Image (cartoon, rainbow, N blue to C red; front, side):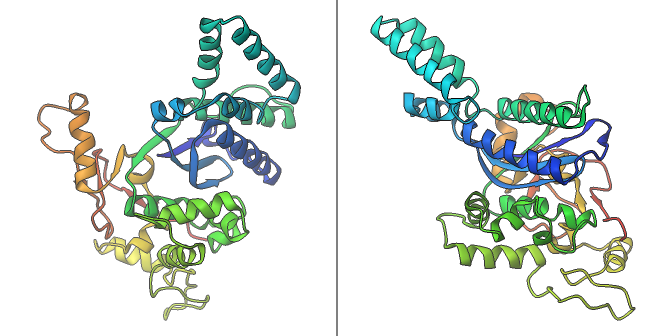
Length: 330
């Protein structure tokens, strides 16, 4: 799942210290919730997460008492965890089956659930931010947006799109220069980020880290397009991807298609305002499963994506024109 949440009024609020706080809360929330992160990026007024959400019933069935206590200890103090352990022991001695069931439900309802994960993540960040800045009130603009993403090419594209957020915003010339995105964290040695990057480019089985990094980097910058600075023939500065703002505009204005590498450096509404992203088979499968939520006149789910060379990727939702927005000029 690709999820996006923005600040109220899309006001730019987060400084470097706030971003560090968000990082700490995010990693704790991941450890507690049982969700797995593949890519992330925190900007001044919003954040992106690409998450793997396990099958909830299967995950809960495999959850033991020690697992529950370990997860609770992430946010609870040692004393609180000890009290819970004592409560469990007491109810077990009394053979209080109903009491034990209630304890399990009280904890398990917060695990392996995307909505609960986002609710708690945003609430904890709100409390921390308001305390740090002496403010009150809402921090986030309503409910988060979510996009169901198939594995393989779709995950890789969305991960790259997330890591390129600071490049699109003009905050960095390359993603590794922005410390609050997963690509920079992976290059910095963070195991969680490296595992996510490997997942983004490993389709059937995991590949070694160095091989995964090489594969992802080529995709991130566009095969054969990477340059070390320099200028275009008409004197405009080139990006690390090997094309300039003017080159992108020229392609767009001429009605042509951007390459995938170029498109990922623009704001792609398919990745933020869509419903499902993946192969034709995957998108159609979701459409059939949710058939009652669409109009009777619609016969199929997957739609071709406009504006760039998207390959086999398809989207479900009908979007307005202008699905790609050009990055702001620097």
